[in-house]
Image 1 (cartoon, rainbow, N blue to C red):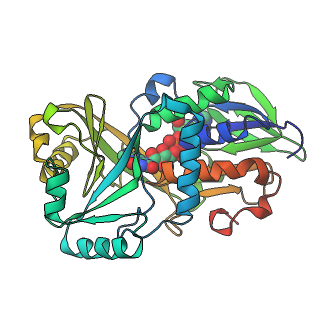
Image 2 (cartoon, rainbow, N blue to C red):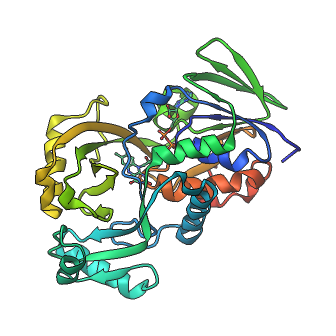
Image 3 (cartoon, protein in one colour):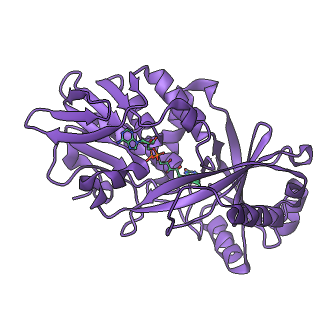
Amino acid sequence: MQPSPRIAIVGAGLAGACAAFALHRYAQVEVFEATDAANQAFRATGGLFHPLMTRRARPNWQHEAALRALEQLLADVGDQVPVRRGLLRVAFDEKQAADFQEAARTYPHWVQWLSPEAVCDRFPQVQAPYGALWIPQGGAVSAVQLIEALLAHSAVPVHRPVRVIDWQERTREVQLRTDQGATYTFDYVILAPGYGYQQHPELARLPFQAVKGQVICLTCPPTLQPLPPVLASVHLVTHGTFLFVGSTYEPDFTDLAPSAARTRQLLKEAMRWVPAVAESTVHNALTGVRVIRPTRPLPVLSPLPGRRRLWLFSGLGSRGLLYAPLLASWLPEMLSHPERLPEPVRLC
Ligand SMILES: Cc1cc2nc3c(=O)[nH]c(=O)nc-3n(C[C@H](O)[C@H](O)[C@H](O)COP(=O)(O)OP(=O)(O)OC[C@H]3O[C@@H](n4cnc5c(N)ncnc54)[C@H](O)[C@@H]3O)c2cc1C
């Protein structure tokens, strides 16, 4: 990168916040976020991370580097973001139990197999009739707190609520136009708009898909403490006095409103794995949208097709915590050397 380039980041979600943190020492960074801070406070995400996130508990692409990058980020922001260490991945049928046992044999340094009896001894609140994997390097963090901490540590200007509505790439710069009628000029622009990609024709024609998800927030009954982060047919994560249960996968959605039927479905599933959930009351329901690349289930960090200064950082799917820190850590070097980006994350 040339000395201290001016870089705009569009979107202050996980991707945008990680990018701002990775770049702030090397560049003059400014962030544009369409929503106000209050809207961010209840972002729907489980906050789970672990290295074997596939259905069959196989290692994810670049899983070791990805976990290292996340751990480095958590260390950099200090104790501002509490981390729940360890994750219990409960098998939801016999077939998955067989896959999990094989994973435990193949990757003993990552996961440990717990029989139903062992789960009962160690985590009496949890019912695991088919057994479970214990993943010590996994865990849960609040994505909202992490985003806030990253932006605070970067100390970069955050324009909010300001929506970027248009861009023009020229030979030496990119011009951004906002919904406030202002125009800004930068050397590079990193678009990290999550679901907002659909509002921009240049992004809407890329091969992404949006999948809505619902999470419910419950009061946490005292009998549940201490409950490790649990992942089964739903996830259960305690944050302070709240228990978050999620999430649904709804590719064909027509609006972003939470649904009462989905809330009932989540509650029913949660009670199947942790019966004490029956003692809690629903506080509220939240929805969010994951962006995935159906043709290739890996995130994207890449110049847009035919562009040099306009980049896209997206497609994190359900693995935002695993992948956003890793991909962001490549930015200082690769922004001026896109040819060095690993092929799987490039758009072209
Ligand atoms: C229900 C649910 C549960 C999940 N659980 C987990 C989990 O347990 N673990 C995990 O790792 N991941 C999880 N995820 C996925 C994770 O939340 C996403 O991968 C991550 O949020 C994606 O981050 P992002 O920055 O790409 O997008 P977003 O978080 O959507 O952020 C994009 C931001 O850009 C802003 N924006 C959009 N357009 C514009 C514009 N034109 N101008 C200015 N700003 C704009 C938006 O307002 C938004 O703040 C979950 C997702 C959902 C929906």
